[in-house]
Structures are given as C-alpha cells and as structure tokens.
Image 1 (spheres, helix red, strand yellow):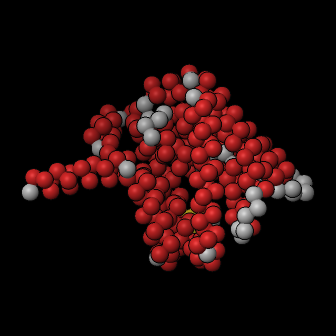
Image 2: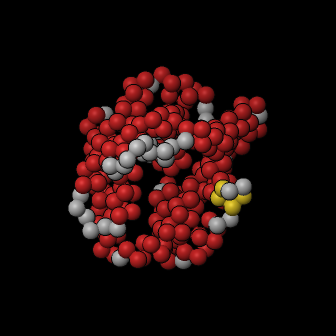
Image 3: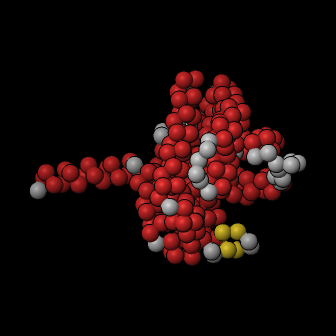
Length: 268
C-alpha cells in the first residue's frame, strides 16, 4: 500500500508540474476526436467576440496581475540586454526563416504553407508566450513586456515581411488601432486590475500566497481551452488534409522550433 501511495504521489506531482503540456495534449486529442463540443463553445459570441475565449484571456491576465511583484517589474526594466535581444530576435531574426519555409516544395494544402509563413513572420502570441515562459520558470514581467511591445511594433514590421514573402501586391492591411484596442481591453486592463487589487489588499496577497498552485492551474486551464476551441473548429479541415500532410506539418513545425531554440541557445 505504501508503494502504491508513493507512486500515486509522484504521478500527482508530475501532473501538477507538467499540467500545461499535458493539458495541451488533451486539448488536441479531445478537439480532434470530439470537435462538436469545442466548436459549440467557440460559437458563443458577445458583441462580436468569442465569449469563452475573452473570459479565458481576462482570467489569465487578472491572475497574472495578482501574482506580479513590483520587484520583478523593476528587474525586467533593468534587463536591457535581454530586451534588445528579444526585440531583435522576434521582429527581425526569426522572420528571416519565413522565405525558406515558404520555398519548401511540400505537397501541402496552400493554407498550411501560408500558415507557416505567418507563424515565422508574426510576433509571439501574448497569452501563450507569457504562459509558456512562466511554465519554464522564466521572468513573467520581461515576457509580458516583450510580447506586448513587439506585437505593437509588429504592426510596422509584419506587413513588410509578408509583402515580400507572399509576393503580395501593395501593403498588407493591419489596423494599429484595432490591435491597440485589443491589447488594452484583453491584456492591459485585466493585468492592471489584478495588480491594483494586489497592491491595495493584504488579503489578496495572502490569498495569492496560499493558493499559488490553484491560481496557476486555473490560468493554465484557461490557456488550454483556447487551442481546444480552435482545433475543434478546424477539425474537418485537419481530417481532410490526411495523415501524410499532417505528419509533414508536424515535422516542419518541430524543425522551425529547433532552429529558433538553437539560435537562442547559441546567443545566450
């Protein structure tokens, strides 16, 4: 009995420690095998926006604000070398892989090839980028600063790369005002609310300290729900592509990430 209890404890600790990757794998399996649930949830809209996705993003960044320490913010602001490297890598280095990816003679559906080009050209997604940095025990404040600022700067750099790589006539239309509104409403407002509540209430600070693991699980669960809904909506297209094309997509995706990791590790 003690042996089984020990195994159960280790499994529980591993599951809690790796809750985000495990959750993402479950999201993929459930989204592909039972898409009707995720597609239905994703179809709930309020004021033209996905209701559940919006709530999830708000929960993620409200919790982030509640757990954000002022000292961490000051440390992030002083890390100018990391900030410069992050800016250069996200906006100018990693997009250089887009032409190579777009030129690969793959027997893929056009949307997959275009998707890879977009992935390489776009800045880091804010919610997942920040969450993965936290999962890896990195600096949340620095990750948030880089993702928000590079997404704003990407309004000017992304059209340039896409116009060249995709050989589009004219500029690629991206609305800076729409992006700014989304950043304010979905990211900065809940983050500031969470931070202010933390600073004005000792009870909130005590609650955060006592329920750190529960808050982390809640934020990760909200993060997992977003790709689950997206995969559920795209399930029909993924199935129609066939296992061969999906295998190629997975291999190309892994290769892109290996190249990016090698660049970051080599420059560290």
